[in-house]
Length: 368
Ligand code: 9MR
Image (cartoon, rainbow, N blue to C red; front, side, top):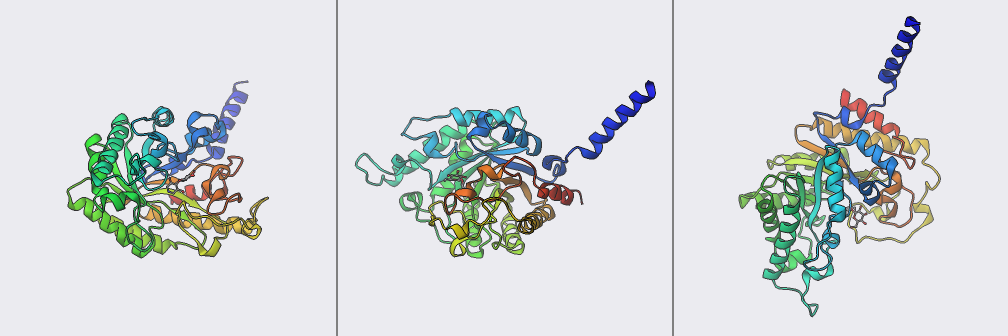
């Protein structure tokens, strides 16, 4: 009897040791945080399978949409915090690194922000005050709880020039240092980031470096540059990404990969990037994997993901966080961008929330 119990217990332990799936967060512990973006069903817990994956594999979160200014302050002075509160509570309950996204962005900003009652652009002073109020209200509410903020998102164009956003047109270049100043005043302990896509384009990298230097030149806090990492199968190369990573690091800031995904679908007209205003008509030939991803294509996709993780591991002294832009392929924004209604396979977990083989490969790379 005693022997059979011993054997049974031994088997259970052995099974646990040999078959327990390694998790991303365990494998990457001590190297960098591994995060994911949360949509509303994850925040509210209705996506129970997704929540289980988040808890199992990730130790950092970012809100995919609910903290954008059009949702937080749709009318001047009227703030709606229910979902943002739930998001922060989720992170705290699960002891995760909680990031805020994003305070100043030309997109998903409420209409009223830039105009007066007659629909004319407001003055520089008015927009600065509106920006100050928004940042101060939001950052103060989560003081000490949200550990880092994407303060300014996507202010530089691919050619390195300033995006002609309303913030830029009305306030001028100063809108960025001012935003960082207001965020720091509201929570002096919070980390502050500049975040952008296609950062591997050399001209864009240089443009962003100028922004970072301008912030630093005014003696203001900036902790990291967020390289979004919306990758295609063609662009960028690992070497191109690495060059920008090193250029940002040389400025004396940390680097974060903040919105990682890898579309496997053909890009219309070689389009890359994440400019949300981009939009192309649906064409069946640009949606080739409706039923499943052929194994050969999946393998190329997997290898490219692993190559990028190897790069992040190589620079783990510079990279503090790598965050996937979502959990499962089912929910990825990539299915709808830049062409609506396609079937993409951009993330690490499939449509049934199963870890793809790439997860094990990343774990293996982390252990090497
Ligand atoms: O994933 C987000 C998607 O659900 C929204 O419709 C979209 C609209 O602005 O924003 C997406 O997230 C973006 C992020 O906030 C900033 N970088 C680019 C991301 C992908 O567009």
